[in-house]
Image (cartoon, rainbow, N blue to C red; front, side):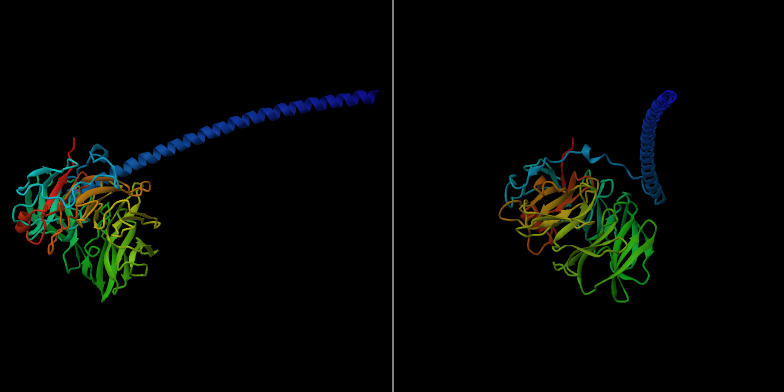
Length: 469
C-alpha cells in the first residue's frame, strides 16, 4: 500500500513538473517569437536607414559632380553649365504605327521657291517649323549626323564652312562668329563653351574655348602620328571622361583609350592595319570600345566588334555595318543602331554588353542616317531618310524608340527635309537633334533649283523645330 501511495506521489510530481516544463517551453516560445519580431523590426529599421543613407550619398554624389562641373567651368573661364528641365517638360510628336501612317507626298516639291534666309515655314503634316540657317550664297552645312551640332545647353549650333566652324544662335538662328575648331570637333557634354578635338595630321589633343576662339593643347601623344577621334566619327563619353583615339606608332595602327579628366592613357591596343576600319568610338557610358569594320561579315576585321574599355574581351556583335550611331536604350544600356539597307532588315539594334540583336522591317526605309545626339532624351534615336524612294518614307525625319517591346513599329514623325539627292553634291540631310530632341538641323536643297545655284556642291543647313507650349 505504501508503495502504491509513493508511486502515486511520484507520478503526480512528474505530471506537475511536466506541466511546469510545458509552461516554461511555451513561455520561451513566446519570448522567442517576440525576439524574432524584434529582430525583424530591427532589421527592417536598419535596411530603411541604409536605404536613406544610400539615397543621401547619391544626392551628395550628384551635388559634388555638379559643383565639380561648375568649378571646371570657372577654371576655364567659362560660364556655369546651365541645367535644362527634364525632357518630360517638352512636347514631342505623337507616336504612330510606322507601317500604317500616311507619310504624305513622295519626293515632295519645294514648299516655296522664294524661301528666304531665316524665313519660317510649317511642315505640312506635323506642324514643325523649318527655316534656313545658311545666309544667301554662304555655305553652312551639318558636318555629320552623329557629330553633335548643339552645345551642351542647346543654345549654340556649329556648322561647317569654308571659313572655319560657324557658330549660330539656336534661338534666333543668327550667325554669330567663326571659330577655328579642331577637325571633327566634339562639343563638351558638360561645358557649353568648350569643344575638343585633334587637328588633322597631328598628335595633339586640343581644347577650344568657343567664346574667345582660343585653343590650348591638353596633351601631346609622343610617339604617335596622324591621330583621329575614331577615324572622325568617334564621340566622347557622356561624362566627358573618355575618348577613343586612333593613331600610328612605328608603322603600326593603335586604338587608344584616353582619360580626358585625369590626362591618362588608360589603354593601347594594336589593331590590324590591313583591315578597313570605318570608325571606332567609346560608348556613352564609357564602358566599351566599339569598332565598325568594312566589309560586312564575321571575321576578325569584318562587321561590328567591341572591347571592354580595358581592351579585354574582343568580341563579334553584328555582321552588318551600315550608317549607324551608338546611343542609350530605355534601360540605360549602350546600344548600336543602324539602317542596314536590306529589304528584310530595315532597322537593327545591338546591345553592346551582351550582343542582343533586335531586327525589324516594319519601317520601310532603304537608306538614311541615324543620330543619338539627343543625350538628354535617352531611349530614342533620330532617323533621316535620304534615298528619295518610290514608296513609303520619303525625305522624312522620325524617331524610333529604343526598347524591346514594339520592334521599331512605333515612331514619332518630326517632319520632312525635302532633301532630294543631287548628283555630284553633298546633299544627304544628316539630321542631328539637339540635346533634348525637340529640334535639330539638317542639310537640304529643299528640292529647289534656286538653292542649287546658290549653294554649289553642298546643301545648306536648315533647322526643324517642334513648337513648345
